[in-house]
Image (cartoon, rainbow, N blue to C red):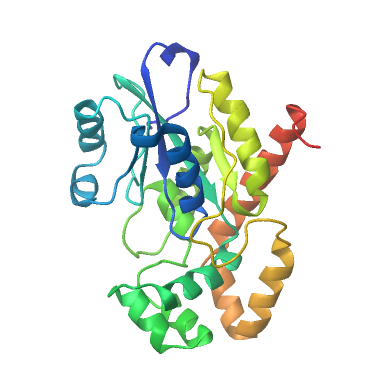
Length: 268
């Protein structure tokens, strides 16, 4: 098993923050902060064909060809990082309650100027119709254990097993930078503290970007209950079942965040 835990042994290496940008998880706001800090040293990687095809070798080669990059963001870094690279890759994730995330995905795809299947269907369908469609194997797993798939490195829409959940949990355990969208301010506070421990001084204050729902003062349980109520009993049951791993991972990551904040005395 290959892990990406940051260790003190790597302090002599060039460090690059790698934002593993999950769709509709406040990633654009985090990218805004990276850009504010690093200017041209931040790279928003959008031409991702080679990233998807070649994985880590492409990423390392790209960074070697661009030695001034200090932070990079991409939607397609599903792969885990090896420990013995010449560059220390520092992964960052932002996780979101998967049920609360569903409404944000739908709202965004309805207004998105795109010809993707999801954007086309969102404009045609009501919210309930869209969720039913997304629950089927005919669509990409955009709201079916999406975060578990990303953390475990599983592409495509095949059904996940407990093995994949364990793979995702290992990635979560060995990554120091895992934030929670509904605790965004606290997450940034913790990130700043953790980055400073490895010699990176960064200011993660922000202006929200590309948001359909606020990341501030979120009562996530209230939103979740509202969405499940809107979907009705039968569809809600299916949605909960097809996001059970994401829900568990979100809950564990949130507890981990709160425990770290308390241990570092970063809670007001």
